[in-house]
Image 1 (tube, rainbow, N blue to C red):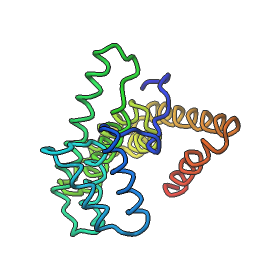
Image 2 (image 1 turned 90 degrees about the horizontal axis):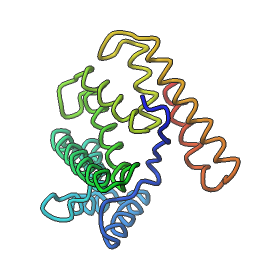
Image 3 (image 1 turned 180 degrees about the vertical axis):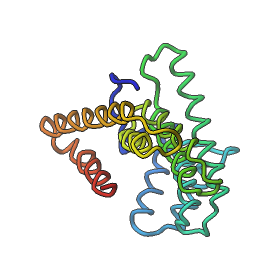
Length: 212
């Protein structure tokens, strides 16, 4: 576990595209939040096309739309395909960023972490694939090591309950400690810059309450 990593904020993750593509993604998200799921998902699908924009963030969001049926009939098998594409594309961009001398990676980290976390959920709940607790735990742990706070909690739960492998109280406490330490970081940010951190702060507690 990387104890010195910084929390990965999904809300602030950047898309891997040009400026026009970013505007299109924001418009698709706006439509989704306004309840226009059909047009929103259609835009995500166009931007996710590997022969077109091949945008990793859109591939994640289109994969989720396919999985949960946002404005279209659910297609869990196809959802796995797009989530895997997003993880592959993001990993390639991250590798190039690191190879160029960027010690903390590039713009793709948010997409990579989110794709890996959602793949873990697919294997955990058998969404589009056969249920595989071992794979789910491995994906959660990978996302946690990349700095995802939700994945930290899920990885800790896996070790506590013995999901996907033997129980391990030491690993549970390690993941739980890092998650709590990052929560304190969020508190510190909230106290310094309330408006900037309020959304992430509330999202953390909302997620914990749902798992309680």
